[in-house]
Image (cartoon, rainbow, N blue to C red; front, side):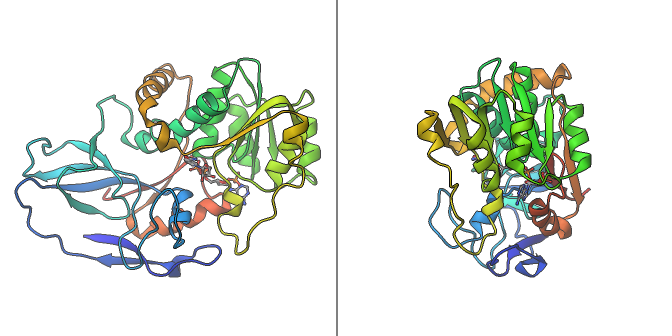
Length: 331
Ligand code: NDP
Protein backbone atom coordinates (compact mmCIF):
# COMPACT_ATOMS: atom_id res chain seq x y z
CA UNK A 1 0.00 0.00 0.00
CA UNK A 2 1.00 3.64 -0.05
CA UNK A 3 1.24 6.28 2.66
CA UNK A 4 2.17 9.97 2.73
CA UNK A 5 4.82 10.86 5.29
CA UNK A 6 6.11 14.18 6.58
CA UNK A 7 9.61 14.47 5.09
CA UNK A 8 10.62 17.70 6.78
CA UNK A 9 8.93 20.35 8.90
CA UNK A 10 7.77 23.29 6.78
CA UNK A 11 8.91 26.82 7.55
CA UNK A 12 6.23 29.11 6.18
CA UNK A 13 3.92 27.80 3.47
CA UNK A 14 4.30 24.02 2.97
CA UNK A 15 5.20 22.70 -0.49
CA UNK A 16 5.50 19.28 -2.13
CA UNK A 17 9.10 18.89 -0.85
CA UNK A 18 7.80 18.53 2.69
CA UNK A 19 5.83 15.38 1.88
CA UNK A 20 6.79 11.94 0.56
CA UNK A 21 4.65 9.22 -0.98
CA UNK A 22 6.01 5.88 0.21
CA UNK A 23 5.17 2.26 -0.56
CA UNK A 24 4.75 -0.06 2.38
CA UNK A 25 3.90 -3.73 2.56
CA UNK A 26 1.11 -4.85 4.84
CA UNK A 27 1.61 -7.90 7.08
CA UNK A 28 -0.84 -10.83 7.20
CA UNK A 29 -3.96 -10.17 9.29
CA UNK A 30 -3.66 -11.55 12.82
CA UNK A 31 -6.59 -12.67 14.94
CA UNK A 32 -8.67 -9.70 16.09
CA UNK A 33 -7.48 -7.49 13.23
CA UNK A 34 -9.18 -6.03 10.18
CA UNK A 35 -8.00 -4.50 6.92
CA UNK A 36 -9.48 -1.20 5.76
CA UNK A 37 -9.32 0.33 2.30
CA UNK A 38 -9.70 4.11 2.63
CA UNK A 39 -12.22 5.74 0.30
CA UNK A 40 -12.04 9.37 1.43
CA UNK A 41 -9.59 11.42 3.46
CA UNK A 42 -9.83 14.89 4.86
CA UNK A 43 -7.22 17.62 4.72
CA UNK A 44 -7.68 20.30 7.34
CA UNK A 45 -5.94 23.55 8.31
CA UNK A 46 -5.20 22.24 11.84
CA UNK A 47 -2.77 19.73 10.31
CA UNK A 48 -0.38 22.62 9.68
CA UNK A 49 -0.10 23.09 13.44
CA UNK A 50 0.77 19.41 13.89
CA UNK A 51 3.73 19.86 11.51
CA UNK A 52 5.38 22.13 14.08
CA UNK A 53 7.36 20.44 16.86
CA UNK A 54 5.64 21.99 19.89
CA UNK A 55 3.30 21.17 22.73
CA UNK A 56 -0.35 21.67 21.79
CA UNK A 57 -3.76 20.10 22.31
CA UNK A 58 -2.63 17.35 19.93
CA UNK A 59 0.84 15.78 19.47
CA UNK A 60 3.05 16.89 16.56
CA UNK A 61 3.49 14.63 13.50
CA UNK A 62 6.76 12.67 13.50
CA UNK A 63 9.21 13.04 10.61
CA UNK A 64 9.23 9.97 8.34
CA UNK A 65 5.96 8.63 9.73
CA UNK A 66 2.64 8.52 7.89
CA UNK A 67 0.57 11.63 8.53
CA UNK A 68 -2.80 11.23 10.24
CA UNK A 69 -6.22 12.74 9.79
CA UNK A 70 -9.88 11.98 9.37
CA UNK A 71 -10.72 9.26 6.84
CA UNK A 72 -13.54 6.98 5.84
CA UNK A 73 -12.93 3.52 4.47
CA UNK A 74 -14.39 0.11 3.85
CA UNK A 75 -13.50 -3.10 5.68
CA UNK A 76 -12.12 -5.48 3.02
CA UNK A 77 -10.96 -8.33 5.29
CA UNK A 78 -11.76 -9.04 8.92
CA UNK A 79 -10.64 -11.35 11.70
CA UNK A 80 -12.46 -9.10 14.17
CA UNK A 81 -15.81 -10.10 15.64
CA UNK A 82 -17.22 -6.52 15.64
CA UNK A 83 -16.40 -5.67 12.01
CA UNK A 84 -17.60 -7.39 8.83
CA UNK A 85 -16.38 -7.06 5.26
CA UNK A 86 -18.26 -4.16 3.68
CA UNK A 87 -18.63 -2.13 6.89
CA UNK A 88 -17.82 1.55 6.45
CA UNK A 89 -15.60 2.97 9.16
CA UNK A 90 -14.26 6.36 10.08
CA UNK A 91 -10.82 6.71 11.63
CA UNK A 92 -7.97 9.16 12.13
CA UNK A 93 -5.84 7.05 9.75
CA UNK A 94 -6.02 9.16 6.62
CA UNK A 95 -2.98 9.86 4.38
CA UNK A 96 -2.75 6.13 3.47
CA UNK A 97 -4.58 3.88 1.05
CA UNK A 98 -5.00 0.91 3.41
CA UNK A 99 -4.38 0.11 7.04
CA UNK A 100 -4.62 -2.78 9.49
CA UNK A 101 -6.39 -2.12 12.77
CA UNK A 102 -7.40 -3.93 15.94
CA UNK A 103 -10.58 -1.82 15.89
CA UNK A 104 -9.39 0.81 18.36
CA UNK A 105 -10.30 4.33 17.28
CA UNK A 106 -12.59 3.09 14.52
CA UNK A 107 -16.26 4.12 14.39
CA UNK A 108 -18.80 2.56 12.07
CA UNK A 109 -20.41 5.13 9.79
CA UNK A 110 -24.16 4.99 10.40
CA UNK A 111 -26.32 4.00 7.43
CA UNK A 112 -28.12 7.24 6.69
CA UNK A 113 -28.29 7.22 2.90
CA UNK A 114 -26.09 10.35 2.91
CA UNK A 115 -22.87 10.31 0.85
CA UNK A 116 -20.06 8.82 2.95
CA UNK A 117 -17.83 11.85 2.59
CA UNK A 118 -20.42 14.03 4.37
CA UNK A 119 -19.09 12.45 7.57
CA UNK A 120 -15.79 14.26 6.99
CA UNK A 121 -17.60 17.52 6.27
CA UNK A 122 -21.07 18.78 6.95
CA UNK A 123 -22.06 15.77 9.15
CA UNK A 124 -18.59 15.45 10.65
CA UNK A 125 -15.97 17.54 12.40
CA UNK A 126 -16.32 20.77 10.36
CA UNK A 127 -20.14 20.81 10.53
CA UNK A 128 -20.00 20.09 14.24
CA UNK A 129 -17.45 22.92 14.67
CA UNK A 130 -19.86 25.37 13.06
CA UNK A 131 -22.77 24.25 15.23
CA UNK A 132 -20.76 24.21 18.49
CA UNK A 133 -19.19 27.60 17.79
CA UNK A 134 -22.53 29.23 17.08
CA UNK A 135 -24.63 27.58 19.77
CA UNK A 136 -22.35 26.59 22.63
CA UNK A 137 -19.72 29.34 22.36
CA UNK A 138 -21.39 32.38 20.76
CA UNK A 139 -24.87 31.61 22.13
CA UNK A 140 -26.53 32.64 18.90
CA UNK A 141 -30.02 34.11 19.17
CA UNK A 142 -32.61 34.69 16.43
CA UNK A 143 -32.27 38.26 15.17
CA UNK A 144 -28.51 38.42 15.73
CA UNK A 145 -26.23 39.69 13.00
CA UNK A 146 -23.42 37.16 12.46
CA UNK A 147 -20.15 37.88 10.67
CA UNK A 148 -18.11 34.85 9.54
CA UNK A 149 -14.66 34.82 7.94
CA UNK A 150 -13.50 32.08 5.52
CA UNK A 151 -17.23 31.88 4.93
CA UNK A 152 -17.11 29.60 1.87
CA UNK A 153 -14.95 26.91 3.51
CA UNK A 154 -16.04 23.71 5.22
CA UNK A 155 -16.73 25.30 8.61
CA UNK A 156 -17.72 28.70 7.22
CA UNK A 157 -20.31 27.45 4.74
CA UNK A 158 -21.90 25.44 7.56
CA UNK A 159 -21.85 28.49 9.87
CA UNK A 160 -23.61 30.60 7.23
CA UNK A 161 -26.37 28.06 6.66
CA UNK A 162 -26.93 27.16 10.32
CA UNK A 163 -27.03 30.82 11.35
CA UNK A 164 -29.61 31.60 8.63
CA UNK A 165 -31.76 28.63 9.72
CA UNK A 166 -31.61 29.87 13.32
CA UNK A 167 -32.90 33.29 12.34
CA UNK A 168 -29.75 35.39 12.01
CA UNK A 169 -28.69 37.96 9.44
CA UNK A 170 -25.39 36.69 8.00
CA UNK A 171 -22.42 38.55 6.56
CA UNK A 172 -19.64 36.43 5.08
CA UNK A 173 -16.12 37.20 3.96
CA UNK A 174 -14.42 35.16 1.25
CA UNK A 175 -11.66 35.41 -1.36
CA UNK A 176 -13.12 35.08 -4.88
CA UNK A 177 -16.02 36.20 -7.07
CA UNK A 178 -17.23 32.60 -7.55
CA UNK A 179 -17.29 32.07 -3.82
CA UNK A 180 -19.25 35.30 -3.37
CA UNK A 181 -21.89 33.96 -5.77
CA UNK A 182 -21.98 30.60 -4.02
CA UNK A 183 -22.55 32.23 -0.63
CA UNK A 184 -25.35 34.38 -2.03
CA UNK A 185 -26.97 31.23 -3.45
CA UNK A 186 -26.86 29.75 0.06
CA UNK A 187 -28.85 32.72 1.37
CA UNK A 188 -26.02 34.77 2.91
CA UNK A 189 -27.30 38.34 3.23
CA UNK A 190 -24.08 40.25 2.46
CA UNK A 191 -20.78 38.94 1.15
CA UNK A 192 -17.42 40.72 1.20
CA UNK A 193 -14.63 39.67 -1.17
CA UNK A 194 -11.76 40.52 1.16
CA UNK A 195 -9.21 40.32 -1.66
CA UNK A 196 -11.04 42.96 -3.70
CA UNK A 197 -11.96 45.57 -1.11
CA UNK A 198 -9.60 48.44 -0.45
CA UNK A 199 -10.28 48.52 3.27
CA UNK A 200 -11.89 45.54 5.01
CA UNK A 201 -12.86 47.68 8.00
CA UNK A 202 -14.80 50.12 5.81
CA UNK A 203 -16.40 47.30 3.80
CA UNK A 204 -17.54 45.57 6.96
CA UNK A 205 -19.04 48.79 8.31
CA UNK A 206 -21.05 49.14 5.10
CA UNK A 207 -22.18 45.50 5.18
CA UNK A 208 -23.19 45.72 8.86
CA UNK A 209 -24.84 49.13 9.32
CA UNK A 210 -26.47 47.90 12.56
CA UNK A 211 -23.29 46.29 13.89
CA UNK A 212 -22.35 42.67 14.58
CA UNK A 213 -23.62 40.56 17.49
CA UNK A 214 -21.62 37.40 16.78
CA UNK A 215 -18.26 37.10 15.04
CA UNK A 216 -17.27 33.56 14.01
CA UNK A 217 -13.50 33.84 13.62
CA UNK A 218 -11.70 31.53 11.18
CA UNK A 219 -8.97 33.84 9.86
CA UNK A 220 -7.45 36.26 12.40
CA UNK A 221 -5.37 39.37 11.64
CA UNK A 222 -7.18 42.08 9.74
CA UNK A 223 -10.51 40.22 9.95
CA UNK A 224 -10.48 40.18 13.76
CA UNK A 225 -9.45 43.82 13.91
CA UNK A 226 -12.30 44.84 11.58
CA UNK A 227 -14.84 42.71 13.47
CA UNK A 228 -13.85 44.28 16.82
CA UNK A 229 -14.52 47.73 15.40
CA UNK A 230 -18.08 46.82 14.39
CA UNK A 231 -19.21 44.62 17.29
CA UNK A 232 -22.33 45.68 19.17
CA UNK A 233 -22.44 45.93 22.96
CA UNK A 234 -22.44 42.50 24.62
CA UNK A 235 -21.39 40.86 21.34
CA UNK A 236 -19.81 37.41 21.36
CA UNK A 237 -16.75 36.24 19.44
CA UNK A 238 -16.17 32.52 18.89
CA UNK A 239 -12.45 32.00 18.14
CA UNK A 240 -12.44 28.93 15.94
CA UNK A 241 -9.32 29.37 13.81
CA UNK A 242 -6.78 31.89 12.56
CA UNK A 243 -5.66 30.45 9.25
CA UNK A 244 -3.98 33.71 8.19
CA UNK A 245 -1.38 33.04 10.90
CA UNK A 246 -0.68 29.33 10.41
CA UNK A 247 2.26 29.75 8.03
CA UNK A 248 3.69 32.86 9.69
CA UNK A 249 7.44 32.73 10.27
CA UNK A 250 7.31 35.26 13.10
CA UNK A 251 4.80 36.05 15.85
CA UNK A 252 1.95 38.13 14.43
CA UNK A 253 0.96 41.46 15.91
CA UNK A 254 -2.31 41.31 17.84
CA UNK A 255 -5.28 43.51 16.98
CA UNK A 256 -4.53 47.11 17.95
CA UNK A 257 -8.11 47.65 19.07
CA UNK A 258 -8.64 45.09 21.83
CA UNK A 259 -9.98 47.86 24.08
CA UNK A 260 -13.28 47.29 22.23
CA UNK A 261 -13.65 44.20 24.43
CA UNK A 262 -13.95 46.50 27.43
CA UNK A 263 -15.88 49.39 25.97
CA UNK A 264 -18.46 47.12 24.35
CA UNK A 265 -18.44 44.49 27.10
CA UNK A 266 -17.69 41.71 24.60
CA UNK A 267 -17.19 38.04 25.31
CA UNK A 268 -14.43 36.29 23.37
CA UNK A 269 -13.83 32.55 23.68
CA UNK A 270 -11.66 30.04 21.89
CA UNK A 271 -12.72 26.42 21.55
CA UNK A 272 -11.66 23.02 20.23
CA UNK A 273 -14.55 21.03 18.82
CA UNK A 274 -13.42 17.70 20.31
CA UNK A 275 -14.08 19.02 23.83
CA UNK A 276 -17.75 19.24 22.87
CA UNK A 277 -18.12 15.81 21.27
CA UNK A 278 -20.69 14.74 23.86
CA UNK A 279 -23.14 16.92 21.89
CA UNK A 280 -22.45 15.14 18.59
CA UNK A 281 -25.71 13.17 18.71
CA UNK A 282 -27.77 16.33 19.11
CA UNK A 283 -25.91 18.01 16.25
CA UNK A 284 -26.14 14.98 13.93
CA UNK A 285 -29.91 14.62 14.48
CA UNK A 286 -30.45 18.30 13.63
CA UNK A 287 -28.05 18.40 10.68
CA UNK A 288 -29.38 15.09 9.31
CA UNK A 289 -32.87 16.57 9.33
CA UNK A 290 -31.78 19.82 7.65
CA UNK A 291 -29.99 17.85 4.93
CA UNK A 292 -32.99 15.55 4.38
CA UNK A 293 -35.25 18.59 4.08
CA UNK A 294 -32.87 20.26 1.63
CA UNK A 295 -32.35 23.18 4.02
CA UNK A 296 -28.58 22.74 4.15
CA UNK A 297 -26.37 22.05 1.15
CA UNK A 298 -22.99 20.38 1.35
CA UNK A 299 -20.25 22.01 -0.73
CA UNK A 300 -17.08 20.09 -1.49
CA UNK A 301 -13.88 20.19 -3.57
CA UNK A 302 -12.41 16.79 -4.40
CA UNK A 303 -8.82 15.90 -5.39
CA UNK A 304 -8.23 12.39 -6.73
CA UNK A 305 -5.69 9.93 -5.34
CA UNK A 306 -3.22 9.84 -2.48
CA UNK A 307 -0.51 11.30 -4.74
CA UNK A 308 -2.51 14.56 -4.80
CA UNK A 309 -3.25 14.71 -1.08
CA UNK A 310 -0.36 17.05 -0.26
CA UNK A 311 -1.45 19.42 -3.03
CA UNK A 312 -4.99 19.44 -1.64
CA UNK A 313 -3.67 20.25 1.82
CA UNK A 314 -1.39 23.03 0.56
CA UNK A 315 -4.33 24.42 -1.45
CA UNK A 316 -6.24 25.22 1.75
CA UNK A 317 -3.89 28.16 2.34
CA UNK A 318 -4.62 29.79 -0.99
CA UNK A 319 -8.35 29.08 -1.07
CA UNK A 320 -8.26 26.30 -3.72
CA UNK A 321 -11.33 24.80 -2.05
CA UNK A 322 -14.97 25.74 -1.93
CA UNK A 323 -16.62 23.94 0.95
CA UNK A 324 -14.92 20.85 2.34
CA UNK A 325 -11.54 19.94 0.84
CA UNK A 326 -11.44 16.15 0.31
CA UNK A 327 -9.26 13.54 -1.33
CA UNK A 328 -10.90 10.49 -2.88
CA UNK A 329 -8.78 7.35 -2.49
CA UNK A 330 -8.88 3.99 -4.27
CA UNK A 331 -11.69 5.09 -6.62
P1 NDP B 1 -11.69 25.88 4.98
O1 NDP B 1 -12.50 24.91 4.22
O2 NDP B 1 -12.33 27.14 5.43
O3 NDP B 1 -10.38 26.17 4.13
C1 NDP B 1 -9.56 27.23 4.43
C2 NDP B 1 -10.05 28.54 3.74
O4 NDP B 1 -9.48 29.63 4.42
C3 NDP B 1 -9.61 28.67 2.31
O5 NDP B 1 -10.51 28.06 1.43
C4 NDP B 1 -9.51 30.17 2.13
O6 NDP B 1 -10.72 30.67 1.59
C5 NDP B 1 -9.34 30.72 3.54
N1 NDP B 1 -8.00 31.29 3.75
C6 NDP B 1 -6.81 30.68 3.60
N2 NDP B 1 -5.80 31.50 3.90
C7 NDP B 1 -6.38 32.69 4.24
C8 NDP B 1 -5.87 33.97 4.64
N3 NDP B 1 -4.56 34.19 4.76
N4 NDP B 1 -6.76 34.95 4.89
C9 NDP B 1 -8.08 34.75 4.76
N5 NDP B 1 -8.62 33.56 4.39
C10 NDP B 1 -7.78 32.56 4.13
O7 NDP B 1 -11.09 25.16 6.27
P2 NDP B 1 -11.94 24.62 7.49
O8 NDP B 1 -13.35 24.94 7.29
O9 NDP B 1 -11.55 23.22 7.74
O10 NDP B 1 -11.37 25.49 8.70
C11 NDP B 1 -11.72 26.85 8.83
C12 NDP B 1 -11.09 27.40 10.11
O11 NDP B 1 -11.63 26.71 11.23
C13 NDP B 1 -9.58 27.22 10.18
O12 NDP B 1 -9.03 28.35 10.79
C14 NDP B 1 -9.43 26.00 11.06
O13 NDP B 1 -8.18 25.97 11.70
C15 NDP B 1 -10.57 26.20 12.02
N6 NDP B 1 -11.06 24.99 12.68
C16 NDP B 1 -11.12 24.98 14.04
C17 NDP B 1 -11.65 23.93 14.73
C18 NDP B 1 -11.73 23.99 16.21
O14 NDP B 1 -12.07 22.98 16.84
N7 NDP B 1 -11.45 25.13 16.81
C19 NDP B 1 -12.13 22.72 14.01
C20 NDP B 1 -12.08 22.85 12.57
C21 NDP B 1 -11.56 23.94 11.94
P3 NDP B 1 -10.80 32.08 0.77
O15 NDP B 1 -10.77 31.73 -0.68
O16 NDP B 1 -12.09 32.65 1.22
O17 NDP B 1 -9.61 32.88 1.17
